[in-house]
Image 1: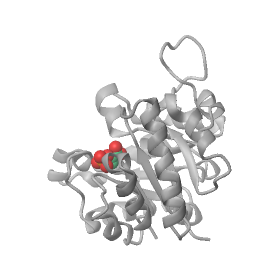
Image 2 (image 1 turned 135 degrees about the vertical axis):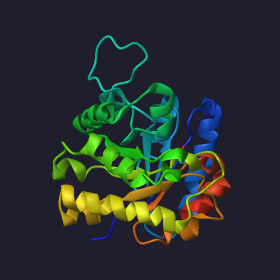
Image 3 (image 1 turned 90 degrees about the vertical axis):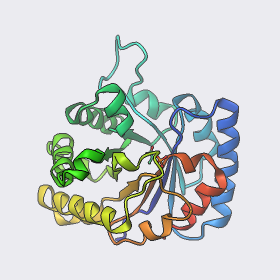
Image 4 (image 1 turned 90 degrees about the horizontal axis):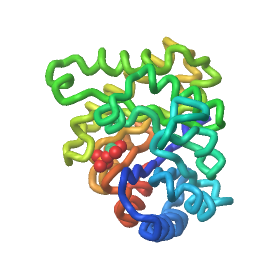
Length: 255
Ligand code: PEP
C-alpha cells in the first residue's frame, strides 16, 4: 500500500466569504483537469467558509475540507470556541492541530494538542499535527530533540489505530511565511527522524503508512524537489495556497 500524497492549503485569516468561494471555485476545476496522478487536496479555509466549500467539493473524492483549529473541549461555556463535532457537522473531514501560529500567539502546548487530537478523533475528524523547531533551536543544533519532544508530548498516549488517522506536518518555524525554505535534504532528515520515531513508538506499518507533509514557504519553484524526497509525502502550503495557479502547480509537482 502506498502512502496518500497530499497537498493542503492553509488560508489562515485570509479571504472574506465571497472571495473564499471564488478562490475555491477556481482551485477545484483547475486541479481536477490538470492533476493526473493520485492526490488528495485539502483546503483549510477560515471556519465560516467550511460549509460552503464542503458543498462545493461534495462527491469529489480527491478533495477534502478542514478547519485550522478546534477546541480541546467537547461542548459548553467556551465562548468563541468551536467543537470538533461542530466542525465535522459543517462538512469538514480534517483539522490542523498545533500550527506554529497557534503555539506562538495562543500559547498552545503539546499537552493541549493531545487533547485537541483526542476531541478531533472522537468527532471523526482526521488531525494534521504540526511540529517544527524555531530558528534559534536549529542554530543551536537541538532541532532533533525539539521534534521528538513535540511528537512525544502529543502522540505518545495514542494507540496505533488512532495514530493511523493522523497526518503529520513538519514545518520549521523559521521557514513559515519567511520565504526561507528548508533544503530538501534538511527536510528529509527530519521527516526520516519522524518516521523512525513512529516505528519505535507504534510499529513499522504505522510508520510506513503515515503521510508526513513539509510546510514552510513551499512554492511552485521549490515543490518538486521537496516532494521528490523519499519521506516527504506532500506539502502544507500557506501563502501560495491563496493563488489558484500557484497552488495548482504545487499540486502538479506532488507525485
Ligand atoms: C503554513 O502556514 O503552514 C505555511 C507553511 O505557510 P507558508 O507556506 O506561507 O510559509
